Image 1 (cartoon, helix red, strand yellow):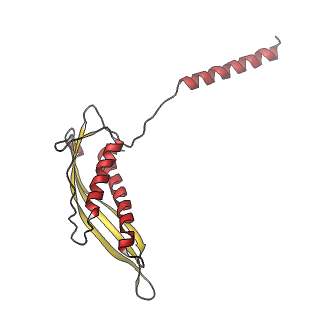
Image 2: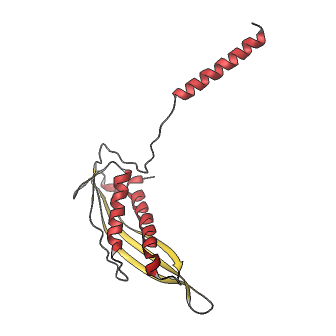
Image 3: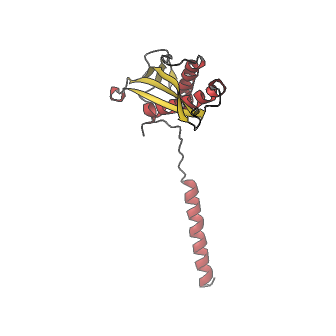
Length: 176
């Protein structure tokens, strides 16, 4: 073999070995949005979040919220749900649900309306009480006031619930 062929052979060999090493050394991450120490925290319990809004009550909202909250934890954690006294405990109430006029057109009539929802949450971590808190979480959505609230309410409430549940999840178990 001449000197050029030996150099090409070495370069190809080094590249092949590098590729083999890189293929053998892969790192796998599982991202589920939570940072729970499952050696300590194994269970979660939820109290029903009643709708205590004084301004406005929409019947399906309470069950929609409770179901979405529990589903989030069951789908994105390995926690076992128990009736009471879980390692993590969530309780609270829907404290506000109301629609407001947001903007007024040149004709003096409302052009936009805002729907707002607020949930008060009491969180207890029985494995680390330094993480306990009571906090309010809110979300709002605007809609054209020419639309009837009944026509957009379910979709808007569903969006607000998703946002609030995400906020609660991040505050309780995401810990970033």
